[in-house]
Amino acid sequence: MARCDYCGREVALPYRCKYCGGTFCVEHHLPEEHNCPGLSKAVSPSVLEREVIRRGEEPRYTVRVTPYPVRRVFYPGEVKELLIAFLAVFLVFAYPWALTPRGALTVFVATLTAFLFHELSHKFTAQNLGYSARFTISPLGLLLTFVSSLMPIKIVMPGYVAIYAPYYNKRDSGIIAAAGPLSNILVCIVTFILSSSPLSRIVLDLNALVAFFNLIPVGELDGRKILAWNPALWAVMMGVSIALYFFL
Image (tube, rainbow, N blue to C red; front, side):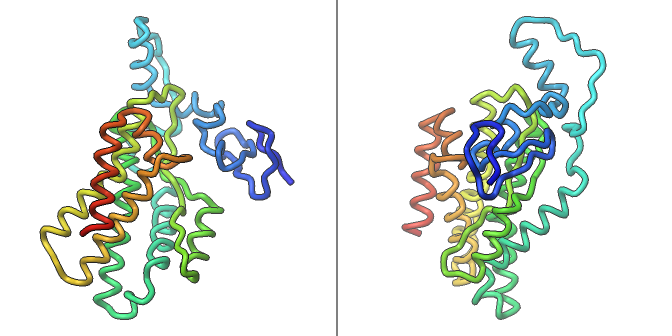
């Protein structure tokens, strides 16, 4: 059985970091969670400059090389991984709605807004703040997502948006985390206003569920990062997601 290179815990299904080559448990598989030495190579130049200026020093980075430039929208292989993850999430919620063309289209829209909008909101918000960000498939999470499409209990965790930066403060972390569930909440509100058909409930319910689940303040979920940054904002978002999921 492998051991996590960061905490030493034995893990049956370890994660391998593509940037440093180390083996890690689920709690430390993200580059920023195990002080990945590859972060210093992937960090955005604007983030380096901002941190130096914050410390009251003069920027002195004359040559900067990063394999993940901020201005690049998608990185090699990222769109493919997004499509695979999208298919996995679609299959999880396909039955029985996708047995008809109209139902399949509804599940497609629900998956598009609940999953893809959520992940891209994380990614583009991070890039807007000056970080490099890439959607990355989690092999174990993708497998569990596919398997759950055949089970009554559904699991949606095919991947995550990895942020590459050694300087990752609480405010930026909270803003990036909030962007995902906020996109789901906005989709719920727009759907509720524009349509009251039974099929539109699928879009509303799935987005409300994703928002509510991700706002739970545990582990690597968005809620923990939002709560650490701005408890009041977390409380409002959680309250709205509960109202959307349980009362609309």
